[in-house]
Amino acid sequence: MAPPPDTFCFAAVGDVHGRMDRMVSSLQTWAKSAHRELAFVLQVGDFEPHRDDADLATMAAPARYKHLGDFADYHQKRRRFPWPVYFIGGNHEPHGYLDTAPEGFLLTSNCRYLGRVGVVETRGLRIAGLSGIHDAPGFQKPHPALSLLGTVSNKDYACFNEQDIEQALGLERADILLVHDWPSGLVAAEDRQDFEHQRRSPHADAVGNEYARLVAEALQPRLVLCGHLHKRYRGTLKWPSGAQTPVCCLASVEQGAEAFAIFQVSRGALQEVTHLGTLPVR
Ligand SMILES: [Zn+2]
Figure (cartoon, rainbow, N blue to C red):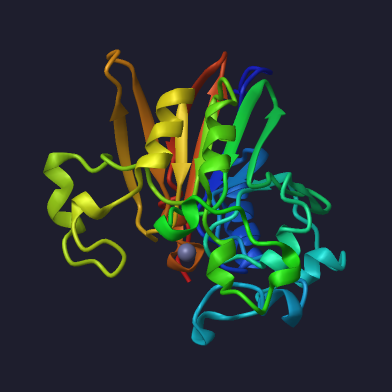
């Protein structure tokens, strides 16, 4: 039976790191096997849309992680994203490209950067995004000017600052919030041991940052999406009022199915329907 007309699905995708083809083919495989269309795709940063080596050179990362990826095919219109993709910036991005329009812009057909702090409204949902990660030295400084690229560390472009947080807190409300790193205080007591001695999380208390949590508390969205740790997790933020916000943490596209989550909106209710466990992991 066909779903009611006000029902639709969207996908959430973890760190892509330039593997656009793999993101697209994974989602197409799901859509085909589920006989469902996707309304849009939300991506939580470390998207790495490099047009060329000059863009790649402006990304903060050790040389061994600097791969061009396949975004150039999409930018030069040899390939096309089949659905609108909305992404935020992570800590590995071509700032020489994205910072040309910190308020966000359309990079190519169906591919929009939400900006340092931005909002998009689509299909009755208000989606807010905060780009970057927390880094104490950069928090109280303005973002460096593009003209300083090459003279300051690329890392100086990769963090959000106090002004970004103020702006995000002023967004009033959101149905969905995209942040790159996790909100702090997310890991449940029973899951703590899963976070010991991981490369990206030495222990559960070190996971996440308080600013992502602060923005989530202010906006109290119906869903928070994040990536960064390359780890699948589902958690809940509990607020003093008794309200709760579910958080969906996504692995990286390179890791396979755990990078993806599919949500359905039906008669206004939003729920996760699958994590693509049936996807072939290549
Ligand atoms: Zn990443």
